[in-house]
Length: 183
Ligand SMILES: [Zn+2]
Image (cartoon, rainbow, N blue to C red; front, side, top):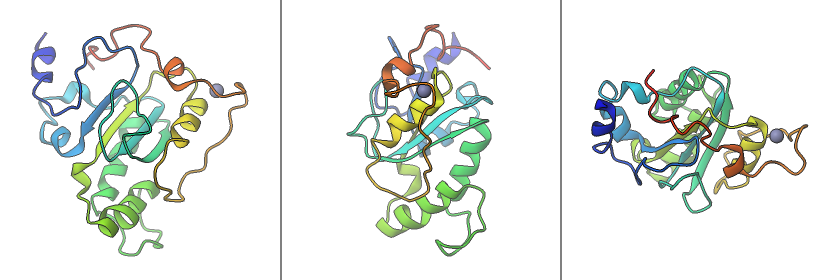
């Protein structure tokens, strides 16, 4: 399996083997984009899911020590992550309060985090999951772990689960093949 061999060369904070959760990443954004063609099969799915930006990598799941900066969900994760990356790398309007952007979170990450703290966007980490049983619960649990507030997140409570599902249970890799599936 070609993809399996190459995967070791992508800068990640851990290995993919024995993974029990349906999370892709964490990938350092710069390293991920350097290998866009080579790792084309690792592109985010064109499917509903949740995605995050963090200061550091994590293990099986995003956690409280990875410096979670941004959490969101989308109907089409691939398209939305593309818009996020564009804005968070500075391809957005000049003022933090300007409304000309594709992705509000990316716009705020650029203005309120990256330029404000002189942090290069490509040094940050990204990950996503399209395998969670309940996206409402996943977003809620991830939002609880945010280390900064960019005031862009509107988290809805979950109408189906009280209390919300635990993130690990919610995002189990039930098939065991999620990360090896070619697109
Ligand atoms: Zn739920």
